[in-house]
Amino acid sequence: QVELVESGGGLVPAGGSLRLSCAVSGRAFSNTAIGWFRQAPGKEREFAAHITRTSGVAYYADSVKGRFTCSRDNAKSTVYLQMNFLKPEDTAVYYCASFRGYGAVRIETTYDYWGQGTQVTVSS
Image (cartoon, rainbow, N blue to C red; front, side, top):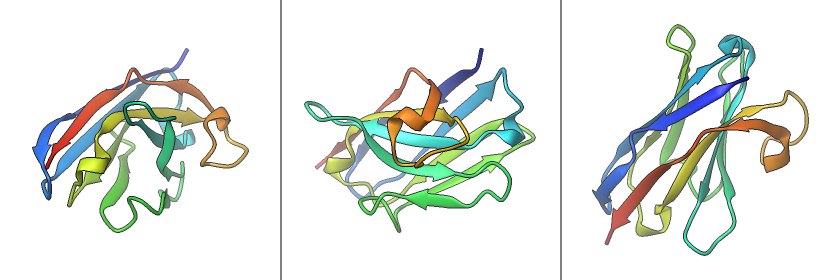
């Protein structure tokens, strides 16, 4: 069983920053790629970012590219999502998930375990 726990959400004014954390246990962290998804009220969950397991290369949705940065600390079994220049449309519950190891990184079904989510609210 793999457990992922997100933290770091909160209320921030537009233009502000937040750093989300995703702590992973139950699987060799260095062998696990992690994705970040978000779900805004009344909308479907969407891909935000993905970081590979070994090289730590990150991929981003166009909507967050240039503002969000995904990184990982293998010693702490934690992945981070640094979010800068936040906009009201970034308001959502943010989830991290473990990648199965195959398939398109932007698709939900290619992830097997999910965290409970953390709320991010950006005020205008």
